[in-house]
Length: 68
Image (cartoon, rainbow, N blue to C red; front, side):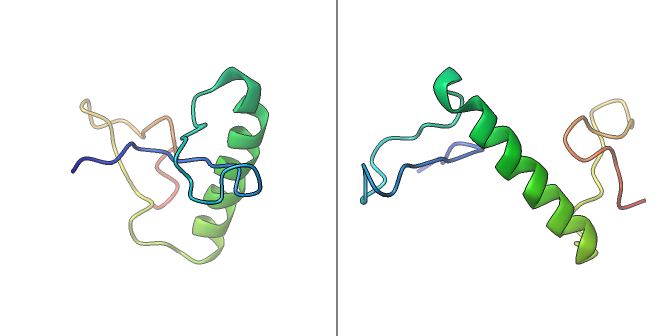
């Protein structure tokens, strides 16, 4: 089973998380805020998986290669 890159659920309205709201325009601000919080936490904890590059060897758009 392949999972989507991002999952966002409304656990009050959908406690079983059957509907993925990631990518939905109505939830874009929430997804942006949570993504930024995750990146901040990954930087603060020196996450070794944070460093990534795109197919051209440039820092990726998600993390900016901050682990370098």
